[in-house]
Length: 431
Image (tube, rainbow, N blue to C red):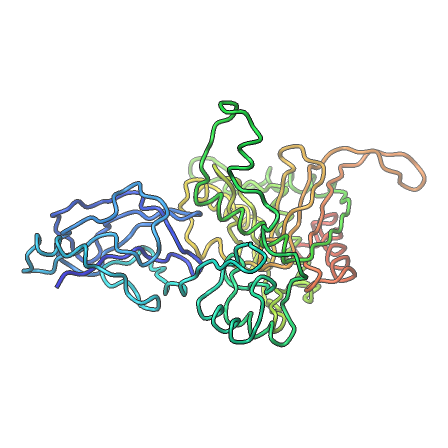
């Protein structure tokens, strides 16, 4: 009996992916462990490794196809001794398994196959806007008389799931009337009608840009942001950085084994600040607060078409040189879209540094489900007053964006104050 090869879920929230390339063609013999295809998500490209053996009877989804749904059939594998033509002809009868089942014929490499999410559709509430929800959530909402348009979704990309309806029935997780997602956003046709034909080029959104847009909208609509800004004197930091880099040991090719950047100091200082003010190292959930034991710091890396945030795990326990080399590796693989999902998912906070672009200061958008993100501006010479005298200092402005549900003003200010003391006295990071 032929086996369906299915589009895998490379992360818990993945719904669609692009079939970038087939490494095998119809009629090819496939052994367990063979790389048969490359699957592209919004963040990375991963190899798809065969589990079963047989002959690739039919390719259902050609390479280059975008937005292929998870668990949809992408190819058919004929078992040993099976009629290949008959197996290929069975393609039209092939059906994806139930969402909770795993694909049987192949798995991505590394092994990141996840159960597919419950099927989700969009319903149209009385207000006319689209509300994305699971079938179970809609059924419970209907039975309970709950208006889906007012329910705050906690599922992937803000979807309403069953637990949100349960919360809404007890009065929690409800939007104010009129605050449905994207309710006031005009349609594509209406936006394009404002501009003259031929005055623009239409560039369709790729998967990465769509996901970034969804997460930013989710963040700004569901997380009550507030912002704290401080100026940091990084004169000592710059001197220490120069001295450390000058004395770095050389490898066999005569190159320094590390080269510290200002951002490496920022990552370390933020990680230690979260440890010294542990109540700020948290994630908000409706049921309770997650207090993290370690400081896992995500660092925004710009890549073509968007950005990705690889995570430096347990940054509080790593030396500056280790952080520096880890970030160099992350950045290189991020730009090649070779990061593994476990390398960019999670994290208890994040850093976004635009100093290299000359930006003085800015406020970053929190990356859910994190509760904070630190925006870092350029280090520059500025006039300051010391002991009543005008002087010149190397100043760097930083802004901490906080989720007010999880981190109150005084708590955020305390944590940012600890960060300032560390960044201004970098020797304290090594004691």
